[in-house]
Length: 440
Image: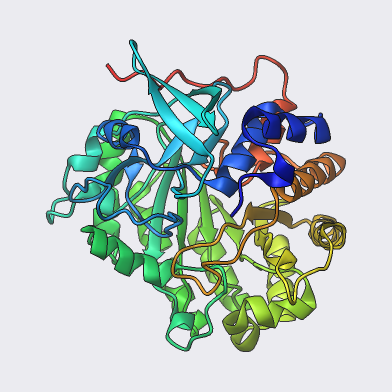
């Protein structure tokens, strides 16, 4: 990953991006660039990590740096912050990269924090304090932050139901995925994940967390099994028991599984009691790239079957509550990817347009090379590409009058600009950033 795009450094690079994308807020441009480039480690991150929401390495690991000698590790997390916010509420993850031009520096005097690019001050950043429940334990003694993760108050209650993907066993894993290696890496750092988040454990955490701060929505996700009926069973049993225990709780759930057959889809939807959005991540749109980038899903499910599953889900659920997503940027990688970014953008427009016409909400996450994945050392496309596709998505959402979903929010949509651009188009009295950055 290079940080001297087109020879520009520091604030000159951001100014260049602003000139190219005048309709995108500067904060969103900074977010996209920071996510692509990462954050270089400094001891200041360890200090912030002692009180801010920390890295718990719950499912994926995106850090491109040898952390063993740099980080302090508690029982359930690494002492660096997981996310940060800009002043307007724009939020992204802290992804460590040794060669990044970005650092986060502590300003002298009043514990303020500044994002810098090549040593030049970009903007003040803010961190949310670590909830007290992170250090509490469930009734069976499990540390709560090993059961559930969060991006903070008024946000997500994230449950990884399956910290495993069967496609790694057959060497058919998606080229961008690191779900299995990240478990091993977390263990190397001293973090032993809880691989089975039972309903009782989750309920214990939910009770403790909701007594401390508001929770806006649940997220239920995981890896995949070749036996997708068995995978559906896991989700159905978990949802049924959770819904029964929660009773009148009407918080929305975002449920993410592989593409399921019709009967299994219906069982998952019924188990959700009208409170869920259902996502089957397609991962890759372009037909010729599907078997190359997601070989296991191509072999055991198939692209057309995956698309058919999404169209069925749209009929089972109300408009826009069936969703899919792709990992945007992989389609640009040679030798198989598009030769030009313009051709890749055209493919992205086809993806978005197709699903929007069928009542399915199409999303994407920005791709970054994940340690332990087959494409660990492959470079992502330039920040311009991520801004182009974000601008396109926002315009197509506007044309189709797509609403903001209650099952996700701006604070937890850390790897795309979907929620940020939607918030920017709201009236001025809309969402404001909470001033979270000063640790008392």
